[in-house]
Image (tube, rainbow, N blue to C red; front, side):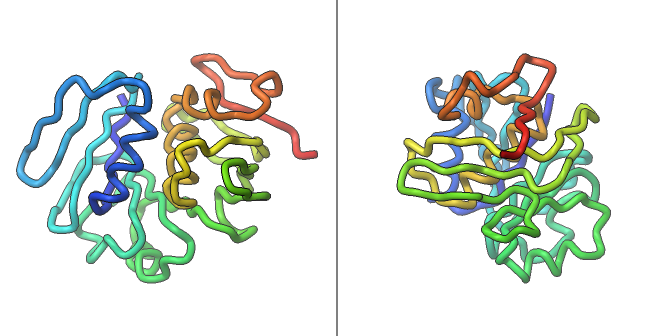
Length: 196
């Protein structure tokens, strides 16, 4: 089971919950210290929502870091994968000397995941370089036309896509892909779409 920690404010938390609990209400919400652990029918993803005042040392987890939320690298474990906004230079500087694999989201060709086009409720996401999933599978660069019916913020949308890719839980990607017939997916593989 993939543990995903979302370090974000309440507004962003609501957006992430729309993604990961889009059609299923969480079975329960439990507060442990300042962590809200929402366990629902999300497949193999166990999401945790945390605020800035925590020090979480879960090893080999995925850390989704909302811009400006990370105050010190000691707040999170030093192994696993961190997803950060490429425009958040403070967070990227704090992560510079960590052992975490840092994946960036944004509008730059240097980002791990970016938009190659962005309209009101439609976009094309572009994985700019190959990455390894938590199950050690390699996902090659691809482009995927997507819908954004929830009108999520760009970082929430892209980081949610990366969480799905990293964990192999691609149902949300598949549900929101504009051209599902181009998508080759099953429970063991991830989307591989050739660049046009």
